[in-house]
Amino acid sequence: MYLFDKDVLLEQKDEFDFEGIVSPNWSINANPNGGNLTAFLAAAMQKKSDKKWPVIVTANFLGKCETEKKSKVAVEAISTRYSLNRYQASLIQDGVERTRAWATLMNENSCDQSAKRYEKDAPEMPAREECFLFPHVPAYTLYDHMDVLLAPSCAGWIKGESNLSPVSEQKGWIKFKDDRPWDALSLLLIADSFPPPVLASHGIVAWVPTIEYSVSVRDIPDTAWIKAVFRSHYLTCDIVEEDGELWDENGKLLAISRQIAQFRKY
Image (tube, rainbow, N blue to C red):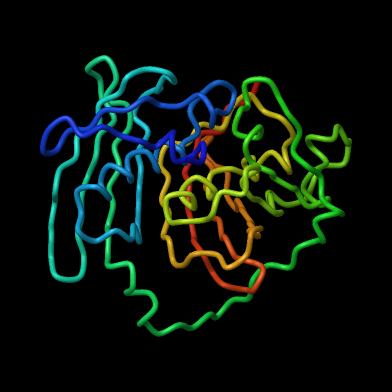
């Protein structure tokens, strides 16, 4: 079993309650990655639904989660209909709700039968050998398990260069180091696995904690590597948005995402 699959395993305790451990393997500065928490909750909702494709998943991060702690996931059915099921799930530690997520699920073959139209092309991406491999950083365990290659145009902030990017953008390539095959749950993690775009334009700041995170999963990659691009356009009231796209090497759209985060300076 691949590491990611072990880390989203949940034991069903009764009809709507599950139990699991928030893994330390996908942390950012020793805090659980929001994409991994979202996948953790989506895995519980997926177990309850007869429709398995999480086409839309949104998470609100209400308080700090701790890793390596037994956690309860309480799932509630909101609506179960012919084409779509909707659930919500709460991650509870020490009796306190830390994260709440909502998922809309549809049949897995629904996308194969639907119309497709792209009015935007996949992003241009430098060759992988030209990109900067995100290094091992203590307490940033996510990057011990993911190969994240940043395009040169947005890697100056981490390489210590004085000239920062004129735009808040992070883009590049990503895959699991253990070459785990892609599925919908893993795309929920991948869409939150690049550094915040605002770091490219502002340099290293104290923290950019996510308030809300939403992913629409559209397809599964046909290639091992995924192209990713994330862009922020507005920073006001110390709040910044992040819009993301995931594509495979054949130009297939995989997911679109949006995050709302706080911007905390030193």
